[in-house]
Length: 124
Image (cartoon, rainbow, N blue to C red; front, side, top):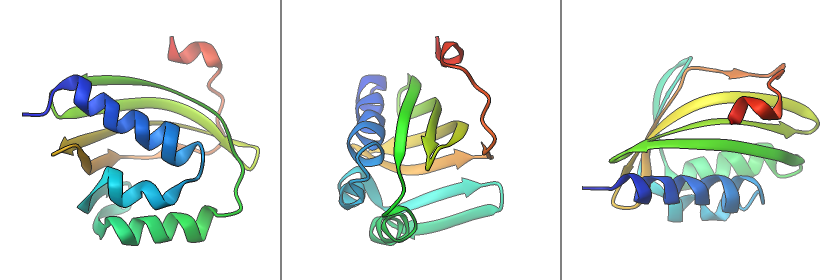
């Protein structure tokens, strides 16, 4: 069974090593071979390589900054409450993940606020 600390460690890499540095090559190392995404528009299953390529194609020139998040975990489930700016536009979100064998294999993201108004104190 995956522990809460292991789940948090995987998600910390997701944000700190992959997202903040736009090091999308890390996706297959951090996400499972099939990454199931439950999103506002429905559920889709992608391979880690497909997700890596989509991020690299859509965000290669984006400026990612001011990333702040908090993780809450129990066993193989971890929730991120976060905010960041992409190309100067603040995005705020709450997203849940499931970890299996040290990799992110499933996520639930009902939406992202693209007109972010969360202040840094929100994540206390």
